[in-house]
Length: 308
Image 1: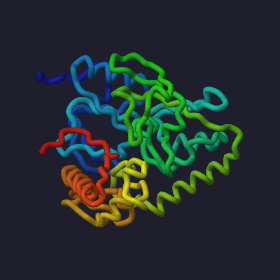
Image 2 (image 1 turned 60 degrees about the vertical axis):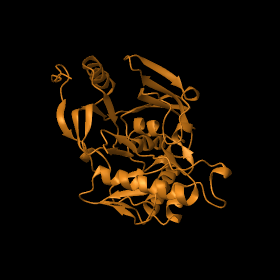
Image 3 (image 1 turned 45 degrees about the horizontal axis):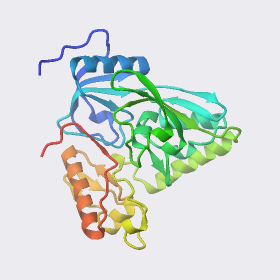
């Protein structure tokens, strides 16, 4: 492939930008090309340039639930930042993809709009949360969505109702399309202070049960199928419980270690490589499969060139 010249009319594009500092786990290699886009116009312009020169594109939201390969990422990596929310009607709020999920919780609570406060404390952006179908307490954020505005591969913008998307637990259903904004179903007329209290309770629960002070990519695995036949008798439908009962807490590969607080979090100590963490994740999968006959599916997304 011929070298790609730096684009004109697209300020802020950088070559070989380190990506590790932009992720919650803090490891991984650089982006071949990188742009921090602020808003839909910059995003569409960047994706148009990448299409024109034949570069693959990777969207980076808040950097959680993501593992960047040690060798980095080919093509253009776009980090969408910033964004706002507005009411479309009494029961619908449209949030732009670059808005942080915590900012959306604060915005809705302040206006007495119930619906998303349980996701307080969830890292990342609205777009990332939709892409991964962020979950908390058995609920999925996709259940709160009425429709999505999507950027298609040809550059056109479409609106898709939630029922047409079939968002899967742990992500999927977008078919490579880029989220521009999400319409959330809310209930108006609630007490703002009561909503803020629920949000604080959600944050407090995370602090009690998750290793938030350590570097991690968030939950490593999706919770398994809830059908009784897919789990051993008496086993809760929770990846953390399976990992714990398999004796994996504290297990390590290189600098990567299974948290002793919550087994579904894989932690990165200084000097950890992406290869270490992926190897540990695979060891967890093999151990749980052999012990319980359950295959755990990763919730972490793998981005870049992972070799063997």
